[in-house]
Image (cartoon, rainbow, N blue to C red):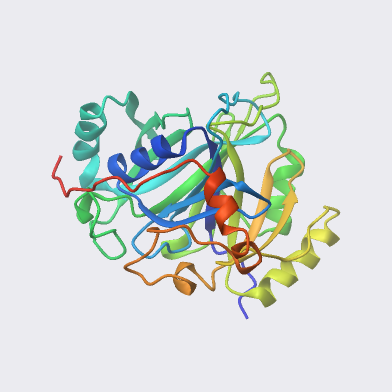
Length: 320
């Protein structure tokens, strides 16, 4: 069986107002809401999942929105940027679209021979579009506002901000099998996975930064992909043998998870590809209603009374 980390499974961040978050990621960036559920550990908070048409691993950006949350503060010990791979031919389209929606962006810039623009979501989460994907419509959300040939295709990767390199680098390369591919000053690029699931994980070292304060606009954790539960249990043992505290396997309904904190302070998860988001909704129904795990279904009425109302934005296909 495959025992490799095969890229990024999902990235989970914090937000403030859920409707504003929903409007931005669906109407502006053109991601599909593939699951509307709650934080299983705190069911008075939504857990919103965005991705491609099917919610494939490697495309999923999720949020816990707390309506009154203040903005987080950037610093070390966090995932400081999330990057999506976008077709190279879509550069001008996205520059125009971001401008049209009043979203300030920086770039296009070059980094490691790749062109990208950087911008923020309404809560200050740092996002990047890396223009290097192939023009294709394979997994793009066909019912979304973005022409499929311009749509974000999957994660390109993420940036991790740290105060020092050695212990985290040893975990990534010696234990988790990441490969160092390039270096530019204080930025070191590592790669995990292969082919279409490969992800670039940049480590940026800046000991002058304070520790990050996690709140709205901050990444909560980053999850790595494995093929099945057997591979996950082997990783659970391997991480423990590396001297890190790792959780038991937790059922997240749409995948199974283990969690541990890497030496620089970033919360890592290892998540299984199956069973996926169609286990309780059809492809056509994804994200249209509140889904609860069986152990919370008994409390649906109380949960629905506490959650702020949200509605899917009216999506119209557009060429701009």
